[in-house]
Length: 378
Image: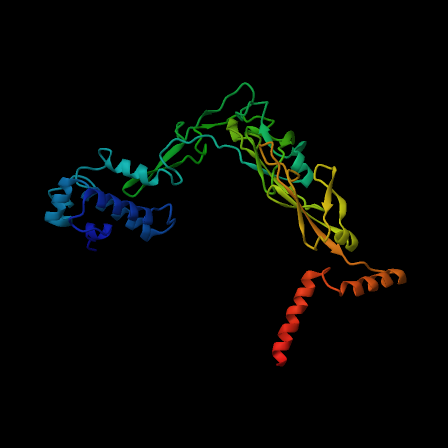
């Protein structure tokens, strides 16, 4: 079967620069790499051909021979013969450098392995609006793991130490021949650590950590909002074999309040007042988030929905000494369950009100309606 043209394999023209060749090779090698195409014989064959093409074309002498003689240049007796790729083999650092750059981060890269850090943990905490205002100190108990004290996290029985892995000789990587190429993968015996435990610790069974609940002291600062995340460094799951611990993240959920609604640093509430107080004026008392009461002066003729602003009576602002404001909206209550005398007085008030001036908004509205009705009937 005739070999495919090297330039066509890489998808470049004959005049392609070294940078264009390298870029094209990266793209094709990633596409057909065995790690991305397991058990795919066709992809494996293409991967070999792509690497063969790049190995020839990246070398100026081999490229010149290929441009002149084609594939015959590297067949037995040809001017470039002398190895799988014409005498050059894998000498020098060219191919290895590109391989490291492309596949170093894929499972089994060439770089040395580091101990696995412990997992981060999440804890959901519900608090009240008052606790969000004041701040809070509390203790929480969480399930988790910690470094085994019996073996100090090594996983080995006391008096012994982990030994060098015989499979990878302590490198954490093993090499496997795949066609023309040597590929490095994480050592299956030590899982990249370079050492194995021959005499596992009886307490942690060689893992280097043990399951254990722990109690932590947590400080909730004043002014936190719903969804605030608090990080406790190194309080997560312990790492295996002495690796660093993960972090613990506390997510705050502020429960709805029976009186206040919160918008950032400001608080809002709605207070009903009698019709007479709205008409004649007076004072009312309303609760505050700090647990006290404050007075509001209701002016004569207060209308439903009117808001009163109390500066500095809102929520604490995180990491400052400042506070937001409190807004009180009044709701004018229509009297119900009236006695005969109350009804009589209201009828008298209604008759007196017809003289005008006491309800300017409604009077103005119906006056406009009369004009509209008149225009419609004319």
